[in-house]
Image 1 (cartoon, rainbow, N blue to C red):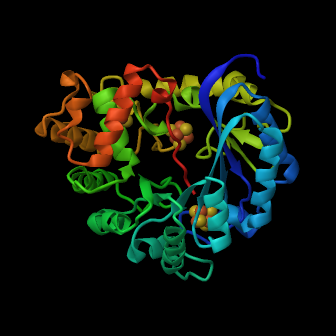
Image 2: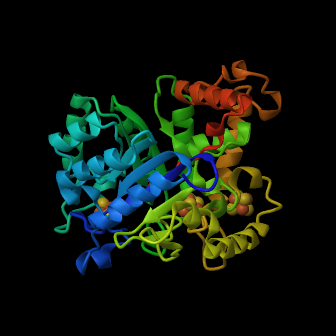
Length: 403
Ligand code: SF4
Ligand code: SF4
Ligand code: SF4
């Protein structure tokens, strides 16, 4: 056991390979893939599992990430499960996988189903959106292959979530984007995030993202049959009503508050996979606690973060946005999607007030009865109860899972 008790979750992102069978046009690993993509050795994998076993965190959340993790084959995953059984007996742990979905075979799907993996697919929307950027190396689109594999997941009953990268095409066709996900039976929710603009400067126009999110919000919020979450939108609703952001993007000083490590194939560790160039140590040499809480680079970074946030202090949305994700800044250090967030937050607050739900008047679970979307209503009640019970889980955030 580590040197103090910590009842929060820790997210351990395992970048088990930088190799991939696809060549998305906005991928930031392209160059490495074409040269010599890194592959995590069993030594590094086992070290990460052992570090988790020795740590004081109560809940251990492993995410197999990449590159495309399924290029490592079934054997890597079964070996990982065996290592976890050996080292994590009696510990509470969960596995997640972020995959592009093209290599999902019936065997993989059964393995993930039998071992309770949380599965997130990178899917940008219907073929017109997906196949524009998410292609194989011969430029062929991937939509049909993914849909075939989703068919097998639905047949086997494996639940899944999705990560979509928003482009101007998504915004132009927001309702068909929504309707695609509505077709799935075992679907939990999606993240709709923006690309890191330095890799694809023309993909999304600022201001346009906000416009799209507003259209999406209206469709989702008033959908009385919807049973899935849109995390960026839920996060805004939870912040406005209950001061509980759901995404790391909207937490003040994410690197200081967030309990995550991103382990590269060679064992080097970054605080977040959006910033792989910031190294805070190596899993072969350092404990999880020292990587997360004691590293001086992290403290230096958090000072810079504080400075950035000073720009935002007089913003009326500061308590909900906290300056956004520090990896999405323009050359002057301003949040790229600032105006979009303002538009969306203002629209959501007005909409909530229109249906009679406002922060000042929340007196109990009943206060959410006018929220038309049943999934959102249920989640609000749950978070409210957690806050009342002062459960540590109420403060737990979930990670953006970029692929
Ligand atoms: S974005 Fe993900 S799926 Fe696309 S090429 Fe890069 S690693 Fe592969
Ligand atoms: S994705 Fe952005 S907000 Fe989230 S932990 Fe990384 S840098 Fe922070
Ligand atoms: S909306 Fe803009 S100004 Fe306001 S907190 Fe967010 S990034 Fe800062």
